[in-house]
Length: 622
Image (cartoon, rainbow, N blue to C red; front, side, top):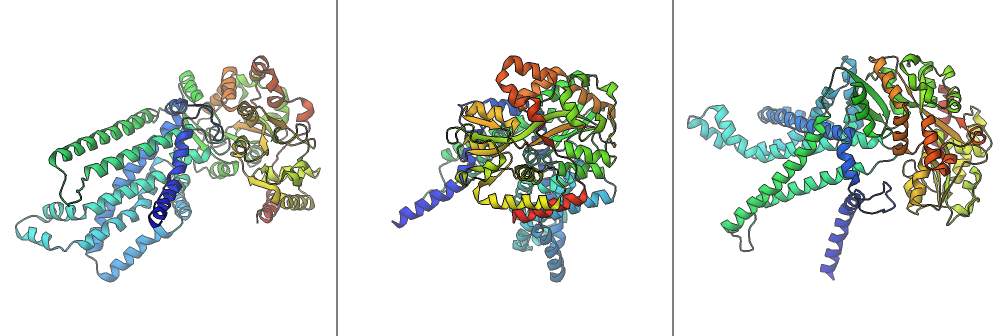
């Protein structure tokens, strides 16, 4: 019984550690992009991964920065240990205590501190600032890995080498280095691992177009993480696994009697280890070579700042071939993350994609340049109805051009909820749907639902109305299964819930996976959004930014991007394409004026109203 319990415990631990990784690996071969529906085996995500320039450049950045940072930190840290080792005890304790502080400190504090230091000295954020930050971040780990090995050395062998006529440098290289080599190797590997895995430090110190794997994943929250990143994660895991196998095999082992394996077996092990190591070099080298191709720069560039995974990657290549302008793409998760970057001009971008209320805010603060329509002849391809909607936040459409449109509605499973039973936002407060509902986890979007359910404007500045909406959300809390944004689609597809507040752009894809899903925009009206292209006032290549906007408005480009996103792209060509290809999709992608007129776009409410909403949001969340 005791042996069985031990075995069961070990199995449970291994399952806890590796089941999530196994799930991710399986999903990387799923034909569908949903995490909840298996649609058959496919290698398409691996193919798409290698064809995606943003992913390949992120891989290149991640591993080159990690290798250089780890190497430099290891050299500096080892040299520092030499100096610390000959210090007096009190001085050594002080230095080691100072070394421990960065490790105990929160990464976000370190990241912000480094960013503010660079900006204070007038250093623009770029690849160099990321590299310096990673070296700084890794250095304490090297010192704490190497220093114990210095403590274990007696110094007698070193002194003996000097007595025999060896120079100090020769004695150090031939005597001391071999003794501390395990610490050096451990420090390098730990630094490399920490650098590859880092998100926070990179997030605060990177510049335009500097994405690593972690920052790229984070930026895709708005529209959901695509399985291409599952494929990349699988390759990384397999690579690490092969390295571990090669390391263990090359290390040799002993039999039960304590004797070494025979020479024949040892040679076989070394051969297998060499094969595995070569496999890793080929695998990693191939990925880095493929990704390194995208790292080449040209003098003519356009720096684009956009929501993650909001553009078909193939369009980047098409734009570069068509115009000869190199695209440097950088991504973000929320408008609030993007705003301080543009406000402080810590990084210069030539074109950005932002939501309606943020466009209004940026324009009012003089942070956007007025567009030159002569450079955007494809402007005429936009549908007039959506240009009128844009007037609500950009009078005269002087600063922005619509990229996508959508509305917030309710998607529900007709197998468990009778079709037509959901018509109002207030239906989400019915006790019979308890723990079967997903609500957004976003201040303005969540409040928009409650305000509309109460019959108020979602842009209300009335303190009593906002407080009433917060009270209504608090009342609903026990009924809600989860507050989620990008995962709402997968929760309803997976059967965890029956009802989800969701954006219209997710509907067609979800219905392809499960035809029993229905979508409704409630009778009280809803939130509609427009994400639009704009050129910052600080843009260095304004003409290149406008060339990018013009390309995105091209008919063929708009259709390609619609097929990729399934969000409404307010281009006449997309409307004609859907009408010809699948007219049943038109009511969702291009609803009639009756529905559109019941919807409101979010507007910038100002600092005082923002504080009021934040206060009530905190009360609701707590």
